[in-house]
Image 1: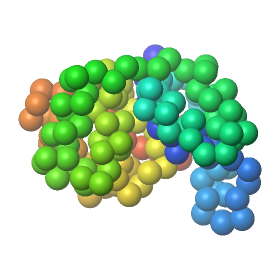
Image 2: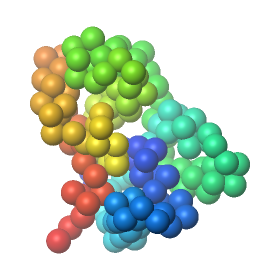
Image 3: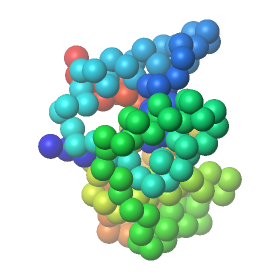
Image 4: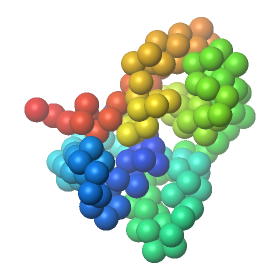
Length: 156
């Protein structure tokens, strides 16, 4: 089965109370639909970084996020991943202020994960950045991860 790296925004949308913002509410609904209908078709993984990010904030909400994460395999943050994350930033594929996003990418790539699932469309699921990210991966001998939203990974 293909592996899917579940980034923190997906866990947050899955466990958050319904939002009044129409766009966020739509993302939450799609996330729930993906989780209910598609997750069994993949090996779901996350990382210690996702665990740290999900632990922050309101203790009750954090506990809900961590319960979901408890069912996933957590990938380790390796020296290889740290080095690749720095290269993403150095090459301008990910902005300097988004080091955590670069690390999510690097963990997925260095572990041979096929998909990175996220709602972060600013630094990750962004068509303008994907090309640079893929170039960095290929230049260093890695297969790039497919960065997508739950909506893009739904079967029709």
